[in-house]
Amino acid sequence: MTGSSEQKHGINLDRTVWEYVAGMPSDNLKSWACSYSGYSEDVGRSVCRLEVPRDRVTVILGFGDRLQINPVDLKTSPVNYQAFVVGLGEAPLLVKHDGFQRCIEIELLPWVANKLFRGASAEFTQGVVALEDIWRSQVNLLVEQLSQMSSWQKRFALVDQFFSERFAESNQTIRSEIQWAWNQLEQYGGCIPIQQLAKMLGWSDRYFAARFREQIGITPKAAARRIRFTRAHRQLTLSDNSLSTIAANCGYSDQSHFTREFHFFSGCSPTIYKKAHFLDLLGTPGEIIQG
Image (tube, rainbow, N blue to C red; front, side):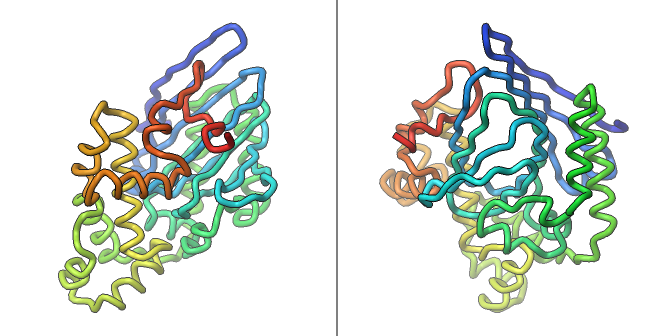
């Protein structure tokens, strides 16, 4: 793929084969701030992971076992998905498969997703949405082609082509003011007053909130909350900082405030989450919620 590259990581234990491949979008898609990741697991047992909300819209193209997904806060039976999109909903998810899984994960900025999905961002805050409900037979053909390819490089190239075509078909306008506002929220880690952003744009608070929600799917206040959590989650998982330090770094009033927010978005305390690991896989075991 022109302008693309791969980084591979993997393990091969007695009954566990796991691979992760990071791919870069081609030059014509880099401006959309996409990232590609390829995952492959053959572990000989069922796997359940806890997935917490992010500040990105995530597209999953699966071509292994179907993933069984249900929100943590809903006592409903899991729904099976092959290819789907997860927007900016608040609920953490339990994601299961039966032991064999291959997929490509694409992360999109919310305003980019709004263009790709032709203004449907608000729908994605209600839960997981199957891509076949949006792109019909096109996505079924894409998944079939991905399953038949022999390398991640070829798969990333096909995804590039598919997404380029979907962007070209969309007539949805991306407002530069909303891009700027989102970038400001990210730059300040969600800790800039929303009224200040509206004032800098020359808009009323109500008008700003309405236009922001049209293109992002959630209000500026909810977006700031999500960005703060994503930053705190990253520090919790990638650093040895104390909970009080993370709370201070990420704009929470104190450690208790951080703990409450973390529980809201993950279903468990940050201490439990920090300690939970698979012995042979990436991710967080869903059993910490189920138990």
